[in-house]
Length: 76
Image 1 (cartoon, rainbow, N blue to C red):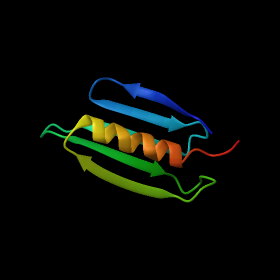
Image 2: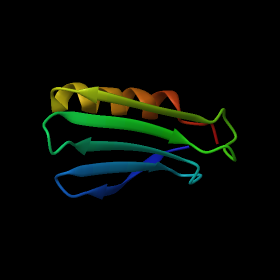
Image 3: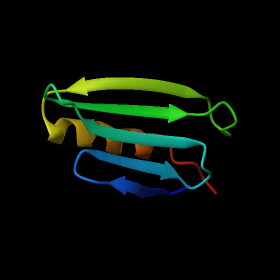
Image 4: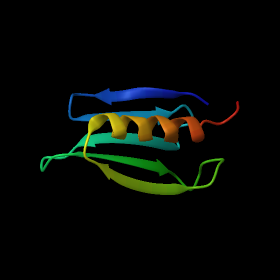
């Protein structure tokens, strides 16, 4: 399954998987740094999960978001 960018407003970028059961969000923190979170719902065909990681720089946060999307894509 593919991912699509559903929100990108300069503060938050959020991708949703085509089945609607998983999201990856990258958010700039008001206090500085960035947070990336993976949320896979219990109804998803793959294992449910919730992870949240904080990074000091955007490049590292974007790399983690990409890793999660690549790892959580599902064969159609």
